[in-house]
Image (cartoon, rainbow over all chains, first blue to last red; front, side):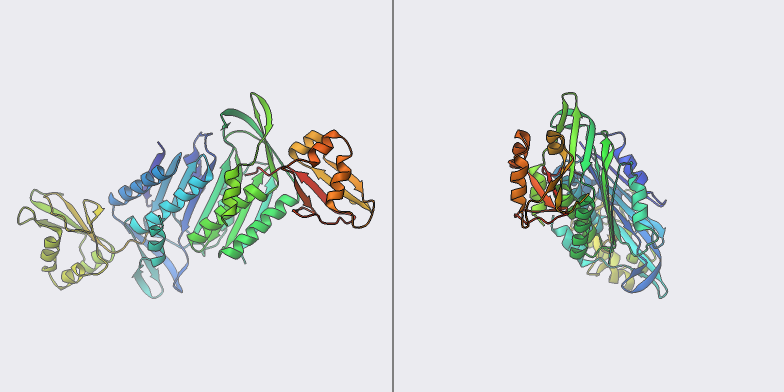
Length: 151
Length: 151
Length: 88
Length: 88
């Protein structure tokens, strides 16, 4: 059974360290695919100064854990981890990291993309942007729901 | 135009440092997808002790650079880098790293998988395994040529 | 948290701000009280509450699982209302 | 490296080992000498050379680009022979 892990934290994280933890001492791994999401400085034309991330503690972890379990049933994975930040972030900050290890790369690519697509549409996080014009809650992008429907 | 880079080296590399270099000071990036290939301890049942990697200097860089240029034409990328080791490697060593940054994750996932598929089938590298039974040159996997044919 | 005969109702993001309410405990008036009945009861708390309960993009979760049907509620259940998610 | 009137021929991996040869300079006997003619000339260097030149999985590159046709060679060209690639 693949080793699956979900962490929600306010602290910053280092993608390199997370990848090191994911592989550990394993020499079975053929490939690791990672996704790191960053806070962008502009959204729909407005300069973003701060991004506030709210979530639903408990449900968030459960939804992402289930997503990783579904991925591990669909593809032969060795390990999968999701780390997601909440609280205040600024442009350039890493916000989410998904790392997947597998013997062969095709499984790792597919599972990493699958995990991000479901995280984007099912995990209870909400983003609020602060720009020069004030604050606004972000709307879900239709492209994200379309991507999830592919699986 | 996306910032494209190819490095062939005998020295070890650190995936975390490479990702840090890829993003630099940019706050345009929405997502980074990376692939890290590792030397596996076993191949077709035999324990691998050393992997020897030979390449065709000059052609290797050219083929990978062209692959990244093709990727940047197909998808809106911010930056792409491939680092590939040659020489002697042992199980657990990172052998190849592909990092792609983009405003949106779909482009980064697609370009990263595209780059690895073409690297596996077009870049002139050859692997020779040393096991308890002696040395052997590896054969190309048919799954790799099939994956490249998808694009 | 979960009093006997009550459900805990939670609000997130835009709805939490609009109602100025993180969570409220609601007594179940009868056995077999359904989620839609809870929503009707909440809508009666005022104009803003009625507005949130009639939102087109209102996601509903019972015990941290999104529901699309109208399940009966049980004392101790946790019900949540929130907008479409925007993480990652 | 590229002498006037010559092509540089390089071998890699299994073929390099089999022939015990990294590279060899070959004089072009005439203008419009084609890759297939170079291969015939190399095959005449001995049994192992003939074996390599008749390999089913022999990839051929001219000036570091894989070719599937039979191009004419020009003095200074770099020709390479190698097995299917196995990097990554």
